[in-house]
Length: 192
Image (cartoon, rainbow, N blue to C red; front, side, top):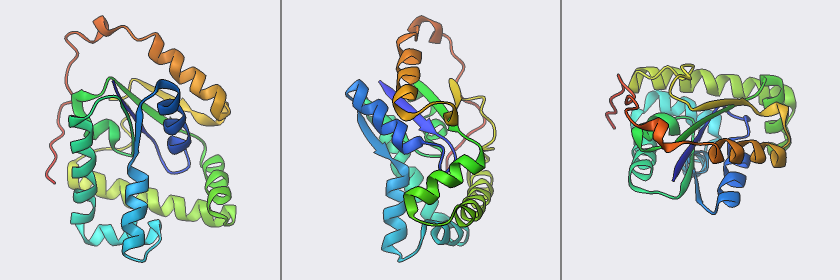
């Protein structure tokens, strides 16, 4: 089973994807971890690296190529990244989108990264604008188009343990017969 988890920074992707993978006995791969490693290799913060990526398209293409390869060649996995749902194409059994109000997301990021909420909010909004621009330019993906996802959740409504229960219940209710004849995602071509 391949499950993708996507959403903006601070939406709970990492926490909930890891928890879901653990609960279901699946591997977990985080595009955010890979991106942060790449930023550190360049001695940059993720925000700086995002803006640098606007000038060097190969950064996104390298990351996205790796994630696409993982999504199309592995099973028994929870793949988490902003574009995981798009990069998995029709290989995903479930595509989840997580979000929360920007104030909640900024608080989470501030707590995780030991910075002020105002700074976390400003950096998050810069990062989102940068990513949105690049996804449209590189792949013609409108990141605000949630039509490819099987379910979209506001993660501010549940604590992590309770939310994992919601996700597992969604997966348990899955009827594979309903996927027969499912139309593929159209209009997306990846040029890595």
